[in-house]
Length: 159
Image 1: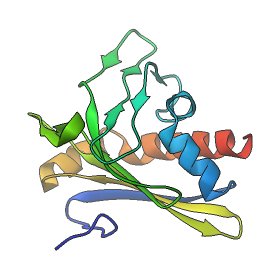
Image 2 (image 1 turned 30 degrees about the vertical axis):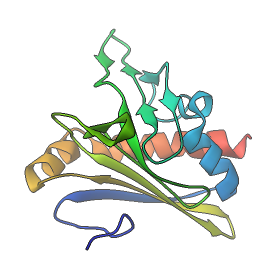
Image 3 (image 1 turned 135 degrees about the horizontal axis):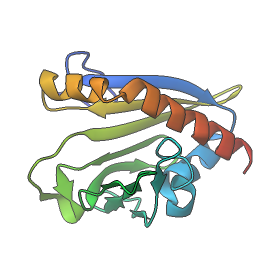
Image 4 (image 1 turned 90 degrees about the vertical axis):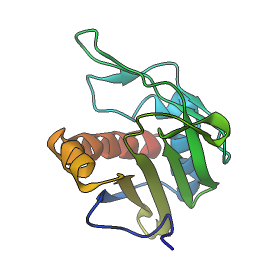
């Protein structure tokens, strides 16, 4: 059985960074909507109106708005794992209360580990098949998620 902390190179994408803040601060940035809105997508895109219920089955909703009026809002997803200062995972394949939805694209996973310099964060996008993983990579996963993690680092260090 696969666990949330296991990486499958065939279907998963991953970025690891060290954030210069404690796991408690990084956890806040992951689970408090007002903080998440400040880092979750690369500028000039913005998250507005985020709703996060940091408990399994809770709402994870991050509507994204582009600089040319683009809107990316597939509706609310579902929090799968919420282990304070350790692991946070959500999916767009389910809505709140673990209700199945059509057309899920990915499960997002953030694993946190205290290190001397702050927090090692492993950010993963889990996909249902190789084609979806490749599509996400072509969309700019590495650049986009990398920029978002850089924004998270800057925000967390200022808290």
